[in-house]
Length: 429
Image (cartoon, one colour):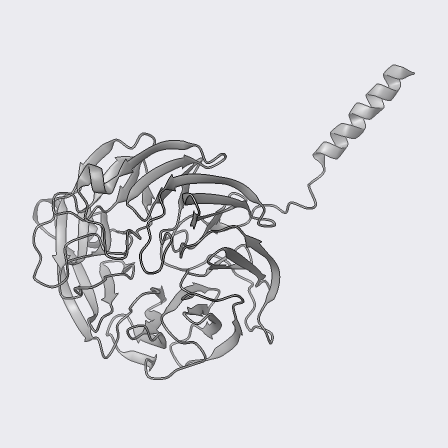
């Protein structure tokens, strides 16, 4: 009798174990790094709300404990990753994707204050590891499951990198076996590190590329281009847009005109042999054409330049949907705007104000652009080159500082980091 009861109990326990956990939905986020899977600010989600109801989409939950800072979030593998300052230091943080419950907090550096405070970079998740860059320039590899420190390297000590006025803000790029970051010194404009050990693979020596801009890494992040038939890493650096050969770190090309002497921030857009770059402070934007050169090199030529009065992106970024660029225009103005990539023609915008004010941090999903304004107004705008069409708006709660963290749309959810709080909304149709 006892044996039959034990056998029945084991069968029942096995059946229960096989049942799906109803309070832990399957992981669905696909946003492992800064600006999403392809670093272009575009979500892979479909079937999203095409308009928002009054007051905005339904809020699922608000998670607390993000700390002080402007880092955005990575969402993948059932977890949410970000960075923030706490009383005793700067932390990389992991939370449950389902409900925002904290999982681990790993100290990665000292609090490194400027006039705004907190980290700016977004974690990069690759397999079982998470890579972060603290605001004081420390690259840290962490175990994704536990937050355990695997290795770290200091850009300021190991590469004599100058600390930017508003601290380090680059989000590390993981490409194959390497982690790519930008110390920004002339002797090490960019470096490739072995992702499991932190061992240096190569470093880039950057020649002078004009008088505009300032030496240093500035605040942009790297994207991958295969322009001119050569795989390369492209970013907006202190002296302008640059391209570095991925195989060995050879400096390929530089374009100085798009640089300003204060802060070069937006991540460039790449499409085929084209690179579109912009900066604020009255500077402007440029479209570059990449072409193959001698001995595996690449040349970059200017197809057009737009003066700052026509289009400049201070910060908040740009997205390329089809053949058109969508972004906020103006130095800390965020006027919504659409530009034809090939010609630089303004399709609409750039000269009117909606309910948002200040710079606009943006992302795109399912035919729409999500504009998050500095004053905390969130807007849904149709991604159409024919006309400006608002499809919804609401006020993010609890805004006390500039509302700058980039929005994330993935897994049918919209994630809005507001300092210590993370607001999560249901944007599925």
